[in-house]
Length: 121
Image (cartoon, rainbow, N blue to C red):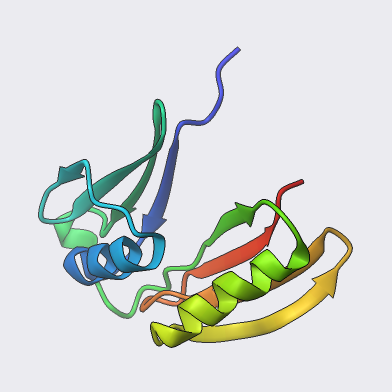
């Protein structure tokens, strides 16, 4: 059986998105091109940003998805990540709160793509 191994987020500016995600997740790209940048996030698993084909790039095109970061330990770990990211100036969409799956919050990248932090399931 196969499992997904590429998680792609559409962005309007690959260079800006690369800087944002590199800083936010403290990772460096494993592959870079003008419109597509990939990051190794686990063995055989990539997280990538892509503007799409050159003729399709338009800042008016909505680009939305949700990327998840699950953190181990206590609910305080979620709050710790929130404090770190707020200090980096991220745009907060949902402040930390409790959901059915545990403590969570949501921020947005420059294109409005959502990044949710929650506890490990």
